[in-house]
Image 1 (cartoon, rainbow, N blue to C red):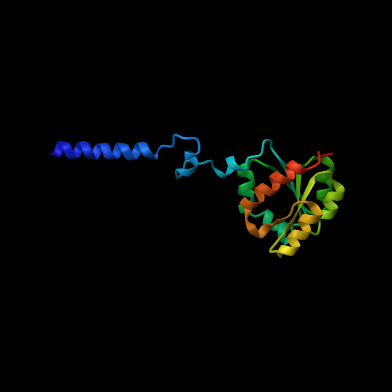
Image 2 (image 1 turned 60 degrees about the vertical axis):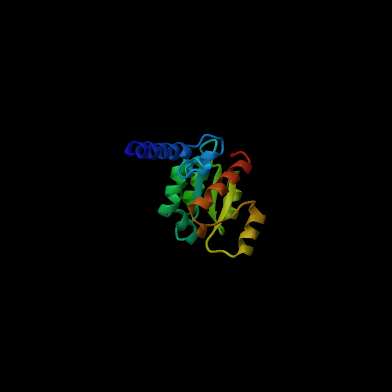
Length: 166
């Protein structure tokens, strides 16, 4: 009797273990822990050079400099450069090429005039109308209150729609 129970128990455990492995194409996305990670989903085809442009006293720029954003941008593999103030930002734009410039909404116009890169105005706790107006003017906009993960698709879209850097 014990042998029959042990055999049935073993058979049930094997069946459960076997059924949890994904074998079909999309099954790996449905099985917990088997899907792609954040960095794999948002990984760009090439390393995107990003400049965080603006004065550090700006709330939007300081939000982008927070550990949450830095960790997310580093995990995906972006080449991120911070500039400190107007003179430093102008020097960075003269010396390097950037795919995307994340600029405070106040500085976005001057960043676009100084570079041939795609500029994403960054707002903080903005209304829907403000974000909509920034998107109309620049093609992209980001509210930094949304968190680091929401920034990744914005950067990828901006890099893909950007004119080639100078």
